[in-house]
Image 1 (tube, one colour):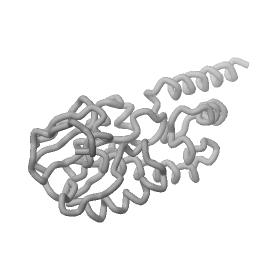
Image 2 (tube, rainbow, N blue to C red):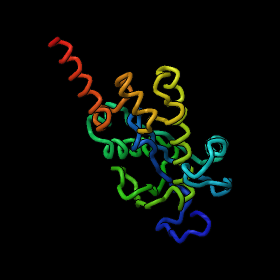
Image 3 (spheres, rainbow, N blue to C red):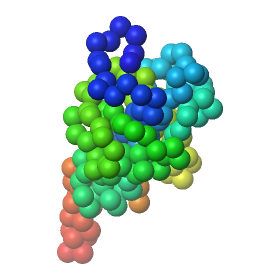
Image 4 (cartoon, rainbow, N blue to C red):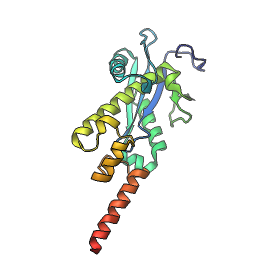
Length: 211
């Protein structure tokens, strides 16, 4: 439990996994999830919702979580899976994979949000859990740093799009690049702005054929 919060977990043992995902809103890239079992004998100071932390602090905590946690795991759903089954189900799939990938099997899991993935262990959801439960905060940090690093790497592959800055979110810079340079292999074609861009490009091709 985070300091000062009134959340009380039904489970009171040590093998508690916090689970969170990052990347539901972007137009590009995978959705990444993490599951973390913290060690009560190795507390980590400064855990919070990853979005409320500076990049520098996230990076420091990323290393500390991996070093001190009893167990941690990452899971993901690909761009193709997002397009095939929709972003909600892809997010739940990524969280399921993260939990199932834990080297230490948890006895209970706390899931950020209001929907649980299909997992075999007892669990409950926690709305805004990434700022209320330390283990979920740790999971959000691992997932966000991992995904952000991947988008920075994609920036080198697709330098026109500015992925290092916006991480795939639909900023003005990203939207302008989409319209100017088109859709890449890492864009989610089921998302409206990307879908509309594809439709426009097909229309342009059709007009050129008529000329």
